[in-house]
Image (cartoon, rainbow, N blue to C red; front, side, top):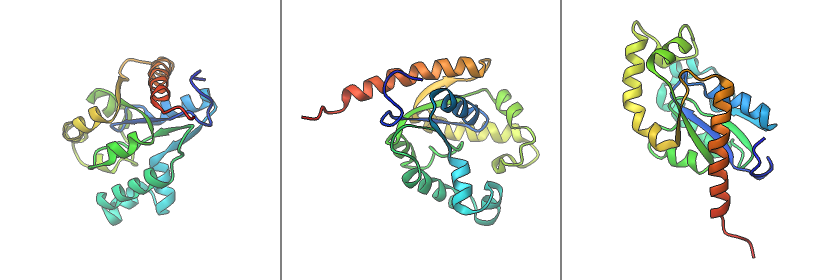
Length: 189
């Protein structure tokens, strides 16, 4: 468990990045290690909508899905003490990067196209990868989203690293950032 603060008042850890970079797997593992609650924004969107992501996209489109994501971030995430995995495009729309950063310490996970393709192959929950050439779609989306990902948080590359190694890396980043954040808060008089 990170030594910075107890889970009740320590900043949220928010994992952002492209689909298939390991946000949910890493988030679940860190939440277990830190004895914190884990939140997945995609799961929260599905609960809010009462429908799967694929159905939301099919019936209402991506714009509606993004509006639901904004609702989830603005109103359903804890103020402190959580570990949160964001949907792959959550930080991309205007204002979302800032909103997400206001909710905690953001670490953006990156992986190569080959790794993402391997991790997402055959996953029907990925409506943006539907079609004949998922690799081309990944490259196109990554190019469009790269700047938003770079601005969202501290970059961590997941290729060739085990879940255990990533836990240690992200714990170090979190501890450093949480200490800086706690130092910057005004002291109560």
